[in-house]
Image 1 (cartoon, one colour):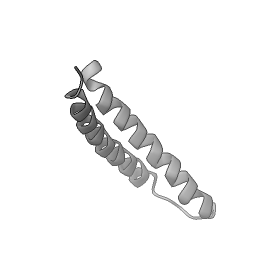
Image 2 (cartoon, rainbow, N blue to C red):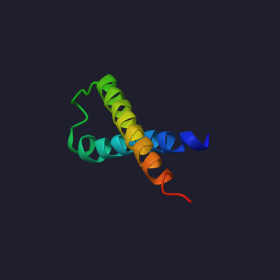
Image 3 (cartoon, helix red, strand yellow):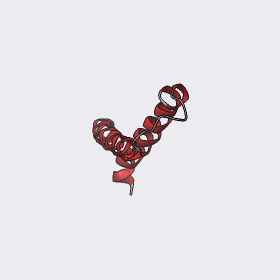
Image 4 (cartoon, helix red, strand yellow):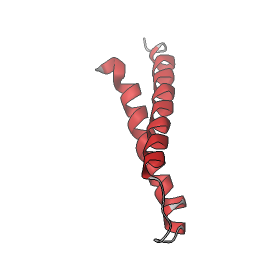
Length: 68
């Protein structure tokens, strides 16, 4: 599990970060009568999580090489 920590943490940060920013930026400024497609929001949050997981893997590999 130690080798997957960067991927897992990156995915969770990307997923929750996107949903939190979506709530702050979009949901707070739309009226309740407007319809939003929930499938697109979930798909975008998963895509954001995957991108952050990739970045987490790169960071873990980069900093893992510097340990003595």
